[in-house]
Image 1 (cartoon, rainbow, N blue to C red):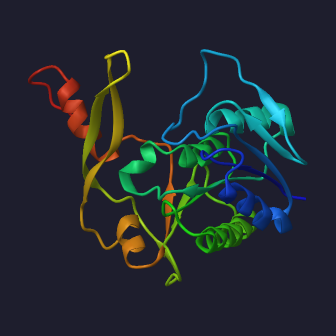
Image 2 (tube, rainbow, N blue to C red; image 1 turned 180 degrees about the vertical axis):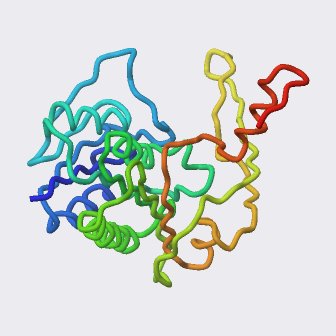
Amino acid sequence: MNQILVTNDDGVRSPGLERLANALTPLGVVTVVAPVAESSASGHSLTLARPLRLEQHEGRVYSVDGTPTDCVNVAVAKVLGHLPDLVVSGVNNGYNLGDDITYSGTVAGALEAALLGVPGLAISVGSGSPAADVARAAEIAAELAARVLEEGLPPRVLLNVNVPRGAHAGLRVTVQARRNHATSVAEALDPRRRRYFWIEEGESHWEVSDRSDHQAIKEGWVSVTPLHPDWTAHDHLTATGRLCAPRGAEVE
């Protein structure tokens, strides 16, 4: 049977995680390994400065006191003992669109799968979405997971899926949106009159693009964006070569 690993960044008790695991159960043996507490905006980080604790809950549900990336690695090495056939991360409470995916722990769980040679799928809904929307997202994830298990994905490719609120118009293949982001940092004093700072969600101005994931969500479509971990700016290799060459030298 297919071995499916489920993780998230909202924590092991997240309703979206349970919905997702239940939706995937008909496709194979589902094992959940998720952070013990919320790990949002952790990005693709590993915990290296302290030990990690693994705890088993009911059935095949485990928690790790670390990040989603930690969870995938601990799952492979110590829970499963082998690579799964698929890793699905979500259902996240909050969209993971455009440039925001660089911060996303949800996407990082699927990204770690891709780096390990396993197909990865990340799925998200809008923040505070009702239970019906979360259930719908879990069903969409299961449908896509079934296709991925049957047909596979190219090496080192993962799918980032975002589901709009309410009824959707269908699935649309998209690209990452771009935005101009102004981070907001609030400042206050603690009871001992010492300054502290709180990073808040900033104001975003999204670039208009008919192909983007952000535009798809605005128009009521499920966005499905294929991603890969190669951040090389291939179109800029020649220009970078000119920067690195001795002055006056010709670069092909």
